[in-house]
Length: 220
Length: 220
DNA sequence: GAATTAATTGAACGTTCGTTTTATTATTGC
DNA sequence: GCAATAATAAAACGAACGTTCAATTAATTC
Image (cartoon, rainbow over the protein chains, first blue to last red):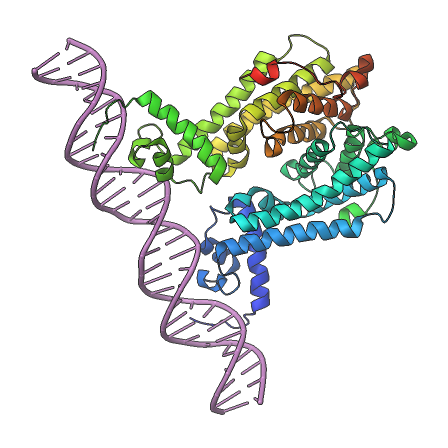
């Protein structure tokens, strides 16, 4: 009827976050009730309000930390100073690895934006724009140097991100393709899409010879 | 207090469908209440149940008819007997035109699948698979003939569809780019992505010289 | 070991939800 | 113009929702 033996605030909060990501990804934010979430954690609904003042606060926290994680992952993976093709390859590899590894929170962050208040929506979109800006810069640099031939930098960046993020819709770990095979194929498609032509790149990025980088499988 | 002057079942039902597509696209299916929908139509909530027995029936109807429309549009636009590059171009043009024209119902059909019952979800996914199968067939034919170089037909088809459908996320009519410019750029990206190489296609599909097809703007 | 703090329960609040029922009025067919 | 039918309103149903509050117990501090 009150505090239970072995109860620990940090563990409970972590359990709430994890259960929330999974439930929201599966049912949707609106369809998930706080009682359902509490039951998944093994707690009463009222206990959730010790950690998150409202349901929307919980959603916002999940989204903000997802975006922070994405940006941090790219900051860590970004090549210090390299040619546009190398930078683009790093961007694609990081993006695919991150999104496959965090399918559920990606789902939440992409699908539940409309449940945020105006101010919080603005914050998340700002983070997203900052991340996408990196890709546009790579495409622009590559176009100016002449290693890419891109008609419209902004449009191409959006098309690439939609294409890459879409991997979470159909990819299931342990099925026909491995993560590194998928990454290699997306890299190949990306390089052809932007018309990469330096260093005989057309064959370099062919996925007939997949990248055997174990980093892809253990990036997170 | 009862039937109102000038009331007409057909008109009311059409108004309900249109308002529902817009409201669900904006708020989400779970977040839209039947009372909200009724108010948008200018009617009491109970009146909606004359046309759709449940809220989920309404959602399913919208989705099924969206998918039927997509398949019918492709049946009408599909070239009778043509080379893979021509067929692929027709597929891309039809897909982009349809999705730009029906952004809201596309949004609904893509985002609200989890609110369907198991059987109805299966039905919609069956329609979707049939539509995607057409693209895979085009890619396979092109690969066998040698005009495309595609690593993985299934993966490439998914990537292309995600890329193309993503246009509804950022495209707004009347802004920087016209529909035909967007279509031309996507066509160019698609052809490069699949490595189309017949008839000096690399330059043919460059969007530097956009397709001026007015069909794109008046397809629906 | 007493006092304090942390973690949780159980019950309740007011609101909103999808849906049903019944009554009432407009339109249509004869 | 009268009967039949179509289209709606008004009110109500029970259930579920997010959230709050007071009580209670476990862990920690001194």
